[in-house]
Length: 402
Image 1 (spheres, rainbow, N blue to C red):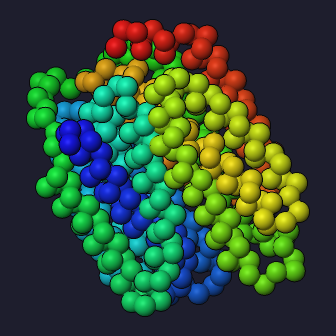
Image 2: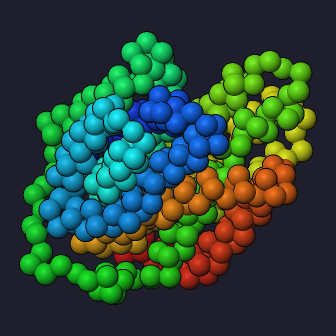
């Protein structure tokens, strides 16, 4: 087995178990906050949003910093550092005595992590150019698969070993990832540059900085669109399923539908992007996803919503891998980690903004308008991507000269 194939396998496994561990937190966080002494329902909701979102903000701030260190010292050291830190910090959350300690630990988690960014950078830089789209699609399937199974696994652990035990179990999963990365990942030693490039010098290294900014904004809009819907799907299902008594179960199935579709389609779309170009897959995925959001506002039953969410998952699986492939193709190796760090910042800012924006828009105008807005936003983004990438003719020049 070639080194890049072996690294991809280890990275997929590590991302899967880390993503599984991280995704366990969301459903049990309000219950853990109650366990820590907050009993008023409004206060629980307030603290849940603050604690959950604080991690995204610190990740957005510090991801470029860890990306810079990845360029300077190597991606494997950053993966080792981040996975070990996650193992420590998640275990410490299991011993938190109040919500203030939990909030502080969540902020520190984001500030000192950066695991996903380092993994994506390693796979993108070590995979042969003609297989990069497929490899990043496979990696994305591991991330989505872990996020899909994590809440189920976490719910079971919370009932069997308690909330504190669940956090310790998440820490152990991250420790397994740390051991796998430490022992199995192979990376050529990185020769540290004597001079660290400034932010201005980084942008000067990019052949088309406007195109790179377009990709960053596309990442932000994609995450904003996806996250604006997720917190209110259960409420929406309760509105269109007035006769059912299994709203939680149906909501879980609808959530799982898009994740399952992404697992199925991500490697296939990645392979397709290697054949026809990631810019074509990105543009088509944005357009189809934008269209699929709109009919979700008109569904009459939960199963109709589930079918549309499944189709949406097939389309959105082509977004982030295509963006990462385009970034890889358009970025000199010396600043790849830094640029992927900036893209991770855009991703986390979109997740934070979307989780807040969706609820506010639904409260002001109704849930249906969230679907209208996000669909229109993705369609406008598709037009901008077409204008910036195709009109600039950037990708074709890079593919011919790289």
